[in-house]
Image (cartoon, rainbow, N blue to C red):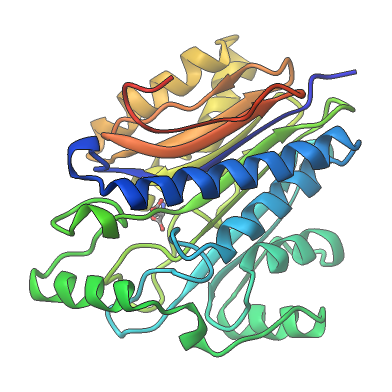
Length: 313
Ligand code: ASP
Protein backbone atom coordinates (compact mmCIF):
# COMPACT_ATOMS: atom_id res chain seq x y z
CA UNK A 1 0.00 0.00 0.00
CA UNK A 2 1.35 3.43 -0.93
CA UNK A 3 1.77 6.16 1.68
CA UNK A 4 -1.16 8.47 0.99
CA UNK A 5 0.06 12.06 0.59
CA UNK A 6 -1.64 15.36 -0.27
CA UNK A 7 -0.09 18.75 -1.01
CA UNK A 8 -1.84 22.02 -1.85
CA UNK A 9 -0.78 25.53 -2.85
CA UNK A 10 -2.49 28.90 -2.83
CA UNK A 11 -0.07 30.72 -5.13
CA UNK A 12 3.52 31.94 -5.05
CA UNK A 13 4.77 35.51 -5.13
CA UNK A 14 6.14 38.49 -3.25
CA UNK A 15 4.82 37.39 0.12
CA UNK A 16 7.17 38.84 2.73
CA UNK A 17 6.88 38.16 6.45
CA UNK A 18 7.74 41.78 7.25
CA UNK A 19 4.74 43.11 5.37
CA UNK A 20 2.18 40.47 6.32
CA UNK A 21 -0.61 41.40 8.69
CA UNK A 22 -0.73 38.91 11.61
CA UNK A 23 -4.50 38.39 11.51
CA UNK A 24 -4.47 37.82 7.78
CA UNK A 25 -1.58 35.39 8.09
CA UNK A 26 -3.56 33.40 10.62
CA UNK A 27 -6.53 33.22 8.24
CA UNK A 28 -4.30 31.84 5.51
CA UNK A 29 -2.74 29.26 7.78
CA UNK A 30 -6.12 28.14 9.12
CA UNK A 31 -7.59 27.84 5.62
CA UNK A 32 -4.62 25.84 4.32
CA UNK A 33 -4.61 23.60 7.40
CA UNK A 34 -8.29 22.84 7.27
CA UNK A 35 -8.22 22.03 3.54
CA UNK A 36 -5.14 19.79 3.81
CA UNK A 37 -6.65 17.97 6.79
CA UNK A 38 -9.87 17.32 4.94
CA UNK A 39 -8.06 15.94 1.88
CA UNK A 40 -5.89 13.83 4.20
CA UNK A 41 -9.04 12.34 5.77
CA UNK A 42 -10.45 11.60 2.32
CA UNK A 43 -7.29 9.70 1.37
CA UNK A 44 -7.14 7.89 4.74
CA UNK A 45 -10.66 6.60 4.11
CA UNK A 46 -9.40 4.98 0.91
CA UNK A 47 -10.45 7.84 -1.39
CA UNK A 48 -8.71 8.29 -4.74
CA UNK A 49 -6.03 10.86 -5.51
CA UNK A 50 -8.36 12.23 -8.19
CA UNK A 51 -11.13 12.83 -5.66
CA UNK A 52 -8.70 14.32 -3.13
CA UNK A 53 -7.26 16.92 -5.53
CA UNK A 54 -10.69 17.82 -6.92
CA UNK A 55 -12.16 18.33 -3.47
CA UNK A 56 -9.13 20.23 -2.14
CA UNK A 57 -9.22 22.62 -5.10
CA UNK A 58 -13.00 23.02 -4.79
CA UNK A 59 -12.51 24.10 -1.18
CA UNK A 60 -9.70 26.48 -2.18
CA UNK A 61 -12.05 27.97 -4.83
CA UNK A 62 -14.67 28.53 -2.15
CA UNK A 63 -12.18 30.41 0.05
CA UNK A 64 -12.11 34.13 -0.92
CA UNK A 65 -8.50 34.47 0.26
CA UNK A 66 -7.24 32.80 -2.91
CA UNK A 67 -7.33 33.76 -6.58
CA UNK A 68 -9.67 31.03 -7.79
CA UNK A 69 -13.46 30.77 -7.72
CA UNK A 70 -14.85 33.22 -5.14
CA UNK A 71 -12.24 35.95 -4.73
CA UNK A 72 -10.77 35.57 -8.23
CA UNK A 73 -8.99 38.54 -9.77
CA UNK A 74 -10.52 40.77 -12.47
CA UNK A 75 -9.78 41.28 -16.15
CA UNK A 76 -9.17 44.74 -17.60
CA UNK A 77 -12.87 44.76 -18.51
CA UNK A 78 -13.79 44.27 -14.85
CA UNK A 79 -15.06 40.72 -15.30
CA UNK A 80 -13.94 37.35 -13.97
CA UNK A 81 -12.63 34.70 -16.37
CA UNK A 82 -11.64 31.51 -14.63
CA UNK A 83 -9.44 28.61 -15.77
CA UNK A 84 -9.13 25.13 -14.21
CA UNK A 85 -7.86 21.65 -14.99
CA UNK A 86 -7.58 18.23 -13.45
CA UNK A 87 -5.54 15.20 -14.52
CA UNK A 88 -5.61 11.57 -13.48
CA UNK A 89 -2.16 9.96 -13.51
CA UNK A 90 -3.65 6.45 -13.50
CA UNK A 91 -5.42 6.82 -16.84
CA UNK A 92 -3.66 9.96 -18.13
CA UNK A 93 -7.15 11.43 -18.67
CA UNK A 94 -7.49 15.19 -18.34
CA UNK A 95 -10.32 17.71 -18.22
CA UNK A 96 -10.15 21.50 -18.33
CA UNK A 97 -12.15 24.69 -18.77
CA UNK A 98 -10.91 28.16 -19.70
CA UNK A 99 -12.48 31.63 -19.60
CA UNK A 100 -15.57 30.58 -17.68
CA UNK A 101 -17.48 33.27 -15.82
CA UNK A 102 -20.59 31.57 -14.50
CA UNK A 103 -19.53 28.16 -13.14
CA UNK A 104 -19.28 28.39 -9.36
CA UNK A 105 -16.54 25.75 -9.15
CA UNK A 106 -14.46 25.58 -12.33
CA UNK A 107 -12.58 22.51 -11.03
CA UNK A 108 -15.86 20.57 -10.93
CA UNK A 109 -16.46 21.53 -14.56
CA UNK A 110 -12.95 20.32 -15.40
CA UNK A 111 -13.66 17.06 -13.59
CA UNK A 112 -16.92 16.64 -15.51
CA UNK A 113 -15.02 17.14 -18.78
CA UNK A 114 -12.55 14.46 -17.70
CA UNK A 115 -15.31 12.03 -16.81
CA UNK A 116 -18.04 12.53 -19.34
CA UNK A 117 -16.56 14.08 -22.48
CA UNK A 118 -14.27 12.72 -25.21
CA UNK A 119 -12.72 16.23 -25.30
CA UNK A 120 -10.13 17.68 -22.93
CA UNK A 121 -10.62 21.47 -22.91
CA UNK A 122 -13.76 23.60 -23.26
CA UNK A 123 -13.69 27.41 -23.36
CA UNK A 124 -16.07 30.27 -22.63
CA UNK A 125 -19.74 29.86 -23.40
CA UNK A 126 -19.34 26.29 -24.63
CA UNK A 127 -17.73 25.36 -21.33
CA UNK A 128 -20.54 27.06 -19.42
CA UNK A 129 -23.27 25.25 -21.41
CA UNK A 130 -21.45 21.98 -20.82
CA UNK A 131 -21.25 22.64 -17.08
CA UNK A 132 -24.91 23.62 -16.92
CA UNK A 133 -25.90 20.43 -18.75
CA UNK A 134 -23.87 18.48 -16.20
CA UNK A 135 -26.01 19.98 -13.44
CA UNK A 136 -23.24 22.08 -11.92
CA UNK A 137 -24.10 25.19 -9.95
CA UNK A 138 -24.13 28.35 -12.06
CA UNK A 139 -23.75 31.88 -10.62
CA UNK A 140 -23.70 35.48 -11.79
CA UNK A 141 -20.22 36.69 -12.72
CA UNK A 142 -20.35 39.18 -9.82
CA UNK A 143 -20.53 36.23 -7.39
CA UNK A 144 -16.72 35.94 -7.67
CA UNK A 145 -16.04 39.61 -6.84
CA UNK A 146 -14.76 40.95 -3.57
CA UNK A 147 -14.08 44.63 -2.70
CA UNK A 148 -10.36 43.80 -2.49
CA UNK A 149 -10.31 42.54 -6.07
CA UNK A 150 -12.04 45.69 -7.37
CA UNK A 151 -9.47 47.88 -5.58
CA UNK A 152 -6.67 45.69 -6.94
CA UNK A 153 -7.90 46.14 -10.52
CA UNK A 154 -8.23 49.91 -10.12
CA UNK A 155 -4.66 50.05 -8.87
CA UNK A 156 -3.37 47.84 -11.68
CA UNK A 157 -5.11 49.98 -14.31
CA UNK A 158 -3.76 53.18 -12.71
CA UNK A 159 -0.21 51.82 -12.84
CA UNK A 160 -0.75 50.14 -16.23
CA UNK A 161 0.31 46.71 -15.00
CA UNK A 162 -0.88 43.19 -15.65
CA UNK A 163 -0.20 41.62 -12.32
CA UNK A 164 0.50 38.19 -11.05
CA UNK A 165 -1.85 38.01 -8.14
CA UNK A 166 0.86 38.20 -5.52
CA UNK A 167 3.38 40.47 -7.23
CA UNK A 168 3.63 44.05 -8.37
CA UNK A 169 2.95 47.11 -6.31
CA UNK A 170 -0.14 45.93 -4.49
CA UNK A 171 -0.32 45.95 -0.72
CA UNK A 172 0.79 42.56 0.61
CA UNK A 173 -2.58 41.66 2.00
CA UNK A 174 -3.99 41.75 -1.52
CA UNK A 175 -1.47 39.39 -3.08
CA UNK A 176 -3.31 36.11 -3.21
CA UNK A 177 -2.78 33.28 -5.64
CA UNK A 178 -3.81 30.55 -7.95
CA UNK A 179 -4.57 27.27 -6.22
CA UNK A 180 -3.67 23.64 -6.82
CA UNK A 181 -3.33 20.19 -5.33
CA UNK A 182 -1.40 16.98 -5.99
CA UNK A 183 -1.98 13.63 -4.33
CA UNK A 184 -0.82 10.02 -4.09
CA UNK A 185 -3.49 7.61 -2.88
CA UNK A 186 -3.21 4.29 -1.03
CA UNK A 187 -3.56 2.42 -4.33
CA UNK A 188 -0.43 4.21 -5.60
CA UNK A 189 -2.22 6.46 -8.09
CA UNK A 190 -1.33 10.12 -8.67
CA UNK A 191 -3.50 13.11 -9.64
CA UNK A 192 -3.20 16.90 -9.96
CA UNK A 193 -5.61 19.84 -10.19
CA UNK A 194 -5.11 23.61 -10.65
CA UNK A 195 -7.57 26.54 -10.69
CA UNK A 196 -7.17 30.29 -11.12
CA UNK A 197 -8.69 33.66 -11.90
CA UNK A 198 -5.50 34.40 -13.86
CA UNK A 199 -3.71 37.73 -13.66
CA UNK A 200 -5.19 41.04 -12.51
CA UNK A 201 -5.91 43.40 -15.43
CA UNK A 202 -5.38 40.64 -18.02
CA UNK A 203 -7.10 41.19 -21.36
CA UNK A 204 -10.46 39.52 -21.80
CA UNK A 205 -9.95 36.18 -23.52
CA UNK A 206 -6.42 35.66 -22.20
CA UNK A 207 -5.76 32.06 -21.14
CA UNK A 208 -2.82 31.10 -18.94
CA UNK A 209 -1.06 27.85 -18.09
CA UNK A 210 -3.58 26.65 -15.51
CA UNK A 211 -6.04 24.86 -17.83
CA UNK A 212 -3.35 23.42 -20.10
CA UNK A 213 -2.31 19.84 -19.32
CA UNK A 214 1.49 19.76 -19.36
CA UNK A 215 1.85 23.48 -18.57
CA UNK A 216 0.11 24.32 -15.27
CA UNK A 217 -1.04 20.81 -14.39
CA UNK A 218 0.13 17.30 -15.20
CA UNK A 219 -0.15 13.77 -13.84
CA UNK A 220 1.19 10.43 -15.04
CA UNK A 221 2.15 7.12 -13.43
CA UNK A 222 5.44 8.81 -12.41
CA UNK A 223 4.56 12.24 -11.07
CA UNK A 224 1.77 14.78 -10.40
CA UNK A 225 2.46 18.53 -10.70
CA UNK A 226 0.47 21.74 -10.10
CA UNK A 227 2.04 25.12 -10.94
CA UNK A 228 1.56 28.78 -10.07
CA UNK A 229 3.30 31.81 -11.51
CA UNK A 230 3.83 33.72 -14.73
CA UNK A 231 1.45 31.70 -16.90
CA UNK A 232 2.96 32.64 -20.24
CA UNK A 233 6.39 31.31 -19.21
CA UNK A 234 4.95 28.11 -17.72
CA UNK A 235 3.22 27.57 -21.07
CA UNK A 236 6.34 28.22 -23.13
CA UNK A 237 8.39 25.81 -21.02
CA UNK A 238 5.62 23.19 -20.63
CA UNK A 239 6.74 23.35 -17.03
CA UNK A 240 4.66 20.57 -15.49
CA UNK A 241 5.33 18.07 -18.26
CA UNK A 242 9.00 19.01 -18.37
CA UNK A 243 9.39 17.57 -14.87
CA UNK A 244 7.83 14.27 -15.96
CA UNK A 245 9.98 14.20 -19.11
CA UNK A 246 13.23 14.85 -17.22
CA UNK A 247 12.36 12.00 -14.87
CA UNK A 248 11.23 9.59 -17.58
CA UNK A 249 13.84 10.23 -20.26
CA UNK A 250 16.72 11.61 -18.24
CA UNK A 251 16.40 9.51 -15.11
CA UNK A 252 16.47 12.62 -12.92
CA UNK A 253 14.96 12.61 -9.45
CA UNK A 254 11.83 14.66 -8.75
CA UNK A 255 13.97 17.08 -6.74
CA UNK A 256 16.48 17.60 -9.58
CA UNK A 257 13.82 17.93 -12.26
CA UNK A 258 11.68 20.41 -10.34
CA UNK A 259 14.71 22.48 -9.29
CA UNK A 260 15.74 22.72 -12.96
CA UNK A 261 12.31 24.02 -13.91
CA UNK A 262 11.75 26.47 -11.06
CA UNK A 263 15.29 27.73 -10.49
CA UNK A 264 16.65 27.63 -14.06
CA UNK A 265 14.19 27.28 -16.91
CA UNK A 266 11.42 29.59 -15.64
CA UNK A 267 13.70 32.45 -14.48
CA UNK A 268 15.75 32.15 -17.70
CA UNK A 269 12.66 33.29 -19.63
CA UNK A 270 11.81 36.02 -17.13
CA UNK A 271 9.16 34.08 -15.23
CA UNK A 272 8.57 33.57 -11.53
CA UNK A 273 6.49 31.22 -9.43
CA UNK A 274 6.48 27.78 -7.93
CA UNK A 275 4.93 24.35 -8.01
CA UNK A 276 4.02 21.37 -5.90
CA UNK A 277 4.80 17.86 -7.11
CA UNK A 278 4.77 14.30 -5.84
CA UNK A 279 6.16 11.14 -7.40
CA UNK A 280 4.96 7.55 -7.23
CA UNK A 281 7.31 6.74 -4.33
CA UNK A 282 5.76 9.52 -2.23
CA UNK A 283 8.66 11.97 -2.63
CA UNK A 284 7.17 15.48 -2.31
CA UNK A 285 8.66 18.83 -3.41
CA UNK A 286 7.30 22.38 -3.08
CA UNK A 287 9.88 24.65 -4.79
CA UNK A 288 9.37 28.34 -5.63
CA UNK A 289 11.64 31.15 -6.83
CA UNK A 290 9.59 33.96 -5.29
CA UNK A 291 9.63 35.24 -1.71
CA UNK A 292 6.88 32.92 -0.59
CA UNK A 293 4.25 30.39 -1.55
CA UNK A 294 1.10 29.50 0.35
CA UNK A 295 1.41 25.76 0.78
CA UNK A 296 0.53 22.76 2.89
CA UNK A 297 0.91 19.01 2.91
CA UNK A 298 0.10 15.89 4.88
CA UNK A 299 1.81 12.49 4.72
CA UNK A 300 -0.13 9.41 5.86
CA UNK A 301 -1.69 10.18 9.25
CA UNK A 302 1.04 12.60 10.36
CA UNK A 303 0.05 16.13 11.41
CA UNK A 304 -0.44 18.42 8.39
CA UNK A 305 2.20 21.07 7.76
CA UNK A 306 1.47 24.55 6.37
CA UNK A 307 3.95 27.25 5.38
CA UNK A 308 4.07 30.60 3.64
CA UNK A 309 7.59 32.02 3.71
CA UNK A 310 10.87 30.87 2.25
CA UNK A 311 12.59 30.12 5.54
CA UNK A 312 9.87 27.71 6.67
CA UNK A 313 10.35 24.01 5.95
N1 ASP B 1 -0.43 30.92 -13.53
C1 ASP B 1 -1.58 31.77 -13.40
C2 ASP B 1 -1.90 32.39 -14.74
O1 ASP B 1 -0.99 32.81 -15.41
C3 ASP B 1 -1.41 32.87 -12.40
C4 ASP B 1 -0.93 32.44 -11.02
O2 ASP B 1 -0.41 31.36 -10.84
O3 ASP B 1 -1.13 33.22 -10.07
O4 ASP B 1 -3.05 32.51 -15.07
